[in-house]
Amino acid sequence: MHIGVLTGGGDCPGLNAVIRAVVLTGHEVHGDEFTGFVDGWRGVIDGRSRPLAPVDVREILAQGGTILGTSRTNPFADEGDVERVLTSLSKFGIDALVAIGGDDTLGVAQRLATLGVHVVGVPKTIDNDLSGTEVTFGFDTAVQIATEAIDRLQTTAESHHRVIVCEVMGRHAGWIAAYAGIAGGAAEILVPEIPFDLDEVCARLTDRHRRGQYSSVVVVSEGSSPRSGPDAEAAARYTSTESVDAFGHARLGGIGAWTASEIERRTGYESRVTALGHIQRGGTPTAYDRVLASRFGVAAVEAVHAGAFTTMVALQAGQIVRVPLEEAVGRPKRVDRSLLTEVAQPLFS
Ligand code: F6P
Image (cartoon, rainbow, N blue to C red):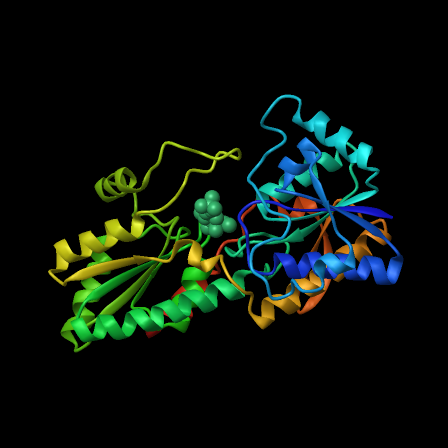
């Protein structure tokens, strides 16, 4: 078969491991040939590709980023682009497409499937907020990076008796904040799923410091916000941006800085902020992510050969399974509240 491969959305450690597994499995086991579309859906629209033979993927397992490039292009945003996608796929003679991406990329894949495109999705995002799978590849690496950062922030916070707010990625869901916060012994974890009351946060920090803890690290997801009211309005002024991407997402950032300055003002504790940003997305994947990405890549090729189109490969109870794309997209997987209330919060003191 002739299989097209693309990576879309924000990059993520493990993308190259998926590409490698797809190409090696397809070539060695099934005799497939591959076309790599560059820069996500942009490359399909423009008919830009690169060859993907085994020789092109043999050394990329541990490499961060994606050798195919990526973009946040949405073919359904601009008139004529969907037709260009269909023309391009037919011109290249693509029998099936493996789309590696998060909610936006796989949402496009699902819509293209209704137009007759044979597509199999692979779940990618450091945010781990895609439904249908217990874990997305890239999440483990991001958590490792954030945890190491929190460990480092703890020692400098202790030395200076400061509060340090660490802003991590997580647009719709606070998985990175929850996992790295627990792993790094955070004093507070603020996530998008639970709007926070900053006065309550400050009261807990004050209580903690009075009981002898003279420093605190507060972990906040970039998508978090205070409960509605004056704080929510003030934070929104601090964090909102005019520009949105092709899927309508605003550029996030700034909640950590607002939270740190308000904690200092309300408690009197000297406070600082560190926003980890794209450090969480760059660089080599952990061993766990390499294995998960490889399992997904192999399973995606097997799904293509089984004719299991309009599905996404997924991890459930330790096994790789196929789920309908419609079960995965358009419904962010939120953090389990019990992780915060039953595990994180008792350990905040
Ligand atoms: O990949 C998802 C994500 O990491 C979000 O958490 C974040 O808001 C976004 O990507 C930022 O991506 P970029 O700055 O590359 O557009």
